[in-house]
Length: 163
Image 1 (cartoon, rainbow, N blue to C red):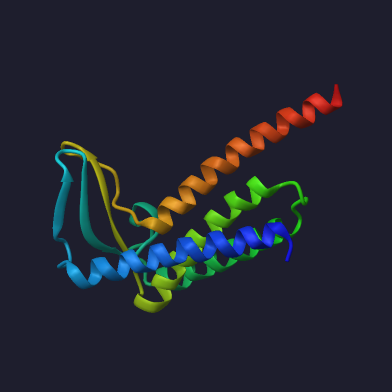
Image 2 (tube, rainbow, N blue to C red; image 1 turned 180 degrees about the vertical axis):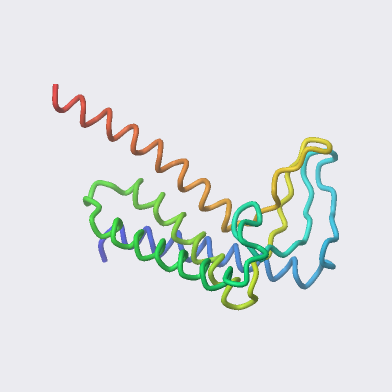
C-alpha cells in the first residue's frame, strides 16, 4: 500500500477511535450540561450537544441535518480528491489532510447517529468562553493549521526552485 494511504488509514483510525470513545465515555458517565473543572478558570469537561456546526451555526434551522450532512460528504469527497493528487513525497500534507478527514468523519458519524454532535472540551479564561468542542473538532483545526503551514513552506520551496 502506498505510504500516503497508510498515513490516511492510520491517522483516521486513531482519531476516529479516540473521538468516538471519548464521546461515548462522556455521554455515559456525565449528565447533559454537567461540568467537571480540570483547571480552575481555564479548562473544564462540559457535556453538551450541538445541533449545528461551529459556533452552533444552523442549530435552529429545520434543514440543518440535511445541509450539514451534505457539506460533510462534499468535504470528505474533496479531501479524497486532493489526497489522490498528492505526490509521493508529500507525507506531511497527507498527515494534515488525514486529520481533517478524520475530524469531519467523526462529527458526521455523530450527526447521522444522533442528529447532533457531542462536545465536551471547554476552554475559557475566567468568564470568557470559547465554544465547547471535541476531539474531531480539534483534529480538523490542527489539520487545517498544519496544512496552512505546509502550504507556506511549499510556496517558499517552489519560489526557491524558480530562482
